[in-house]
Image (cartoon, rainbow, N blue to C red; front, side, top):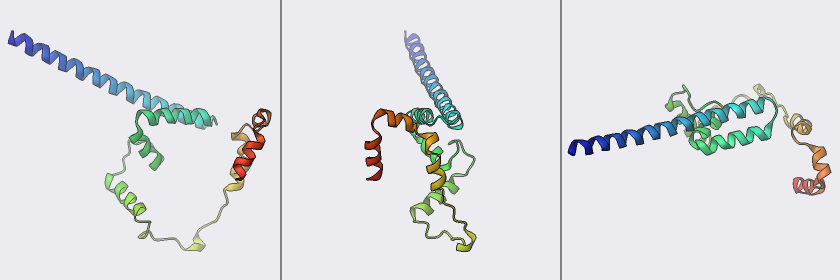
Length: 143
């Protein structure tokens, strides 16, 4: 009787462990699929689809997305932790210990014109005009 009870308990523990492992693997798989889908959407210029995919990835693993957004690369990084902590410490300290380049070594480039001229490729302006929201949008952007 005691042996059967112990065996049942071990089987229950193994079943719970297996279910948790399966759930974790499925979650990780979903996360990777959403990241890949988001990157593919960005590459093809589908910004809204990319936002939806990345939002889904954030919902699944918010801690990994924070790392991805900070470094611009997947959270599985080869960067040593001490480098990341040192960079975060510099940022938290207001970059006081960061040596600045000579001003003459820095080229100034205004990205604004490039972004503004590309808005028509990102925002469907004719659809906004057809919707009747053009004036409301203009007021919202100008205030």
